[in-house]
Length: 210
Image (cartoon, rainbow, N blue to C red; front, side):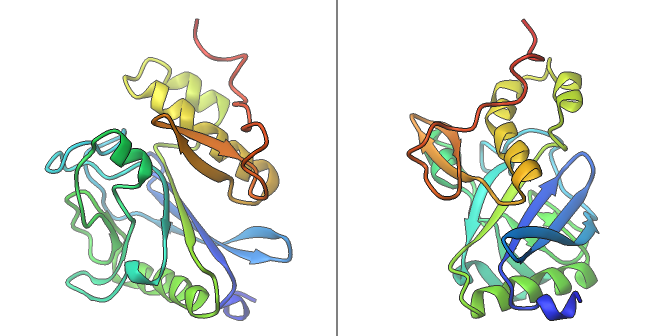
């Protein structure tokens, strides 16, 4: 079944705390998990990348196309995440060449080992060659359940993570990546079909600390 999905549209989620990359393929109207891969290494702990040289691996909502693929990387295969995105640029964040790649060394990238990146890269490349215009990569500090958000509520990054959580919740409910826009330097989450509708409200309204 998995081999038959080669060329289908794909979607990627990354969870730092769980050290996991999840690969989804579109089956009918929904995206379904087809591979879960342990992250061999990332750097800088939890929280977004802000400054070149801080050695932090990015968090946020990224989009790639065929120009982001590097089949002849020094780390076997590599996928450029696309940092800085529109949000990062609006904040003046700096950095470049942040990748998902092979090997197990990281200075801001997500190192997956050669065997894992080979499979991930194969599905990403096939999807783009088969007509998917762009692939979304959503990178979270952890699985953004209400319990985990409550556990991290005193983090200095909490207000940023509140912007990410509706994207996580939308996919968990609908099995479709949320549409993401950047408005006034903030992530805004909407439906994939129409960003003009009201953004999806965070499910944490009742659990946010006062």
